Length: 229
Image 1 (cartoon, rainbow, N blue to C red):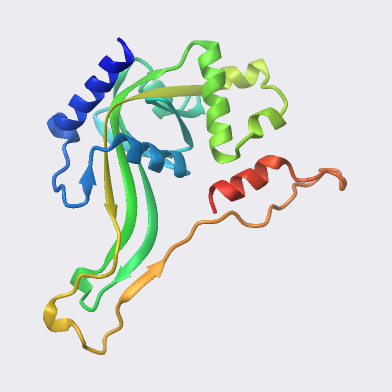
Image 2 (spheres, one colour):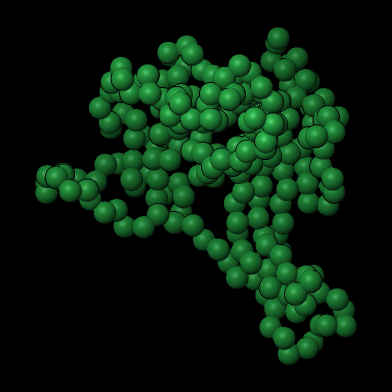
């Protein structure tokens, strides 16, 4: 598939997604992949959904995006890895909360947020080089540059770690911004209304025991604090 064919295919998927991937109300929704990828690249946790023993399961996971794939990892014996190894339908959601929207009426309270919803096919990553790329991406997504600061993985660590690749076949976003939307008859009353911003930031690093006193903080810490400021 050429790059132009791939772009055309992605545009068609956005225009006419399957029923399970359609946005119910378009007021705050879109199928904008660039916006979705921006949200995915900014988040810390993806809530991943899959079916296990005929039951829906949702697990919070660390992740990273490489192109049109999300990579998640866990112990090779966990359900989310073992149950999705063969190439099965799965989904993931990343939500960024920007503020509480406080209205005059409880009915109109809300949140300002940015959310990306991914639908695709999950498979177990078995090729060693792809697994290493994925693990490096997940590590560097949280702490940019950290992978190269760490010692190399041991064979037993590779064996104990499972990586899933979730192909992003369909993606949508939902975003809310702005203040409360109250009924006109409530405007001007003495009930407080407004926005309570929610910010996310990394705190002061706490050095682990047995780290020599002269050991400086690695550059990845500063990079992460800038990324998630």
